[in-house]
Length: 330
Image (cartoon, rainbow, N blue to C red; front, side, top):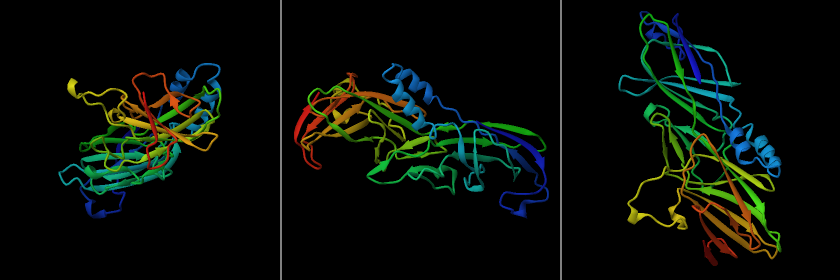
């Protein structure tokens, strides 16, 4: 949460444009940042058995710098509310804190305020369209495959209507626009020792429009999960689409891979050098601000399974890039 306290001040502007001095009244703005997540609670609930506790501890260690609730950098933008929608002032701070107070002064007028947190260390995403509030977007790089996002991004929006000669305060809530997926794999093999080569996620958003709070899917990429332990992989990304409500005649079976809102693909290598591909199709959305923990098990043929009957699974044995080998759907 950002807490602003506005106090009447002298004529000193962010951009040092003194042309508006004189009869205009400036404001002193004090920011406090507090970001919280419930990722650890989710890990404890989903990985609670004695066997899973070491995995839970490793996953917490992996996620701590990403979901610490601490803001590294804060990008504050103030846009006109007079219909022009143009950027009037911008302030950028490295704060490295859950709370931080500092001051800046801006002329008294109405603003559309937009704020973005934790972009500096995230090499996979960037801000674009910042000259106007309606075009400010947190965008993912347009590549076929990207590594897991390095930070959890938060944004805020608030119209600021400043009354003349009156002390004011504004509460601005920062919401996480990122999400996470953790994959926990149980080895159920008896005669082989398949090795997981990689997990990738797809069907996720490629950008987030800050003013409208809307995700876009114009340049989707596959997101590659990181190895946390031999049994756990995890990734940070943007969320999936929300479910639609098609007519009953249009609904497909859960096993149809194109029916899912998002997908997970696993490649495993067997001892003979062949690769098995398993594709999961998820009908439930992956939403911002949460970590989805998915439990899987690996079989002798290198395929992976799940106990969730709603998840579609397609297996390709002796998979080769760009080809289709023996296909098993179930």
